Amino acid sequence: MKNMIIRSMTLAIGLIALSFAAARAADPDLSKLPPAAKKDGVTYEKDIKPIFEKSCLNCHGPEKPKSKYRLDSREAAIKGGSSGEAAVVVGKSEKSPMVIQAADLAEEDLRMPPVDKRDKYPALTKEQIGLIRAWIDQGAK
Image (cartoon, rainbow, N blue to C red; front, top):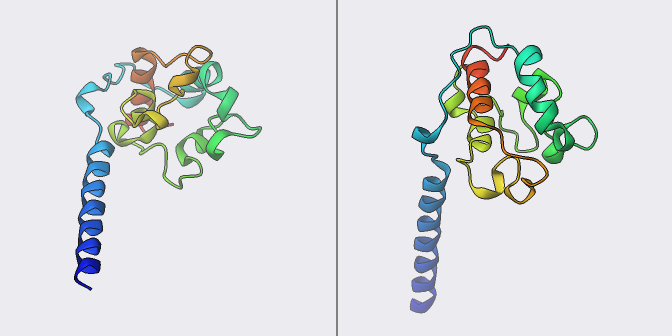
């Protein structure tokens, strides 16, 4: 019985330690985010959709979107995919998973485009991420 209690306590302590490690990994270093672009009046149709069409829609378009996440409309881009979490926190680009993932501040398996496919789908530039940040900060219109 004593051994069983010790094993249970050891397992519980291990799970708690893993939870703290996961929580730390989930907190990105926001100082590494590219700044929001200075451009005013950024809109999805005019400024953001062309970025997504060039870099993202092969995997996140209307046909068989990866993780059920589509970027071919403003509403879908904001809503997010199969995680159930909104990809865009309107007015708060630094809290938007879309920005964190595109800026390579998320865990490697969540970075977009995927690290192992960047020869085919290059990472977004700092300028593109800055424009996406400006769009979100200005209300994601």
